Length: 292
Length: 136
Length: 156
Image (cartoon, rainbow over all chains, first blue to last red):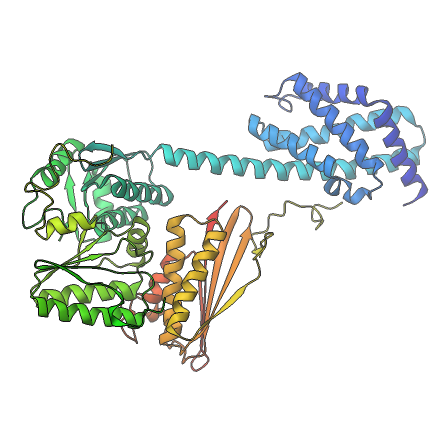
């Protein structure tokens, strides 16, 4: 580290120590002025973030860690930046705005240092230092933002999947899953799992899969639907599919599956009638409880 | 786990029906020995039905699937109907994904329904009455 | 610092890396006897459980393992099963590697086709195992044995 470099670091450290209130104010104002940077976050919260980040930055600089590693290795600084980014991700701020907000601190810090020294060489070193620090912070912020968003998305889609595939008990020993919206492979697998579990728990004899609310399926989903029917039968129950729309019928036809064993009905009501017929009769000696 | 003896899986007889089950811990040799024994019992007891409870099987691979299919065919040739009862949901899903449908094998949800299908009823009317004492 | 500083956590490579937890080292199990087949299944079940797989995923992996080790036992004259637990950004995985020193598979594509079998009724073995796993790779040469590597991933 050269003498000017350490002088610049010392200069920045003391600026953060002595003018933290001023820096925080300016940064908050800058974010509010630059449209979108602070959107979705209140001024109080911005101020709180600023205080925490500046304190962490100061602690990082005082730690003596080399500039190249201070952002990634200093636990408090790293944690503060990560938390700031995750909070913005949750608040729905765009990733660009989040990184830009962090980078806006550069401008503020440079202004403060310009007031503190007139030495051109020192000012240059300070600018390089600030750039290195805040570029690293921007990259970390972006990374944290993306991870946080991925986590939110995967959690939401899991919840949505579970909510959107309710298995309802329609009749004694008759279950139904009304499917609505887009069917993809993951969702079809979730349907299959929850349906089979419900069949076991309820000792259901017939499961109705109603796809009236499904506009179209691709061949892989059609394949999964057929697999669901096969799995239901392996467990010893019957499966009725109702509400197949013409495009879906075409897709299933393209699979070339043998449909002779698959019960289909036009509507959920028809399917229920059929299901009750299957379960409703007193068990015959030949055994209707069993599929052949 | 040392299921070397052929008689490691009990085969019970209820009237014309033989009742037995498959276990996860069966190695291939024991499974084949079990198959032979069951086939002989079907003939010796002149059984008309065979119930195989598989509710304790945690996996069915192609070997077990083939064993079940073969048994069904053999039994049918000997005049008995085989019902495989109690397949667990994860096993059913995996079997289907594996590409196996157990063609020709009859299945029932549990041993009780399997027995009903083979002509055994708990009461004269079967378990479908309105006051069935299943769990609330 | 550069954005590629290795010290910068939050690495996003799509590469298997050793699990941070214990029990991460690959474990090798023999596939020589019928009892070994059962042992192998138990070990795979334990690994999927430790990796946090759901019941259906556990069943898929154990079933695939059963097919693969049986293949090695019957066609390859025995061999080994290696179980590894993997971790990559947001996913956990279990990789099975089954190796034998048998005659090799002359036509891999045919062997992966349902209904193909050279032994006692295992026509669905390889193709079925491939369908149950996410990544699947076969290395084989005439007389040089066969190694099948198969991985299944789960989120979380």
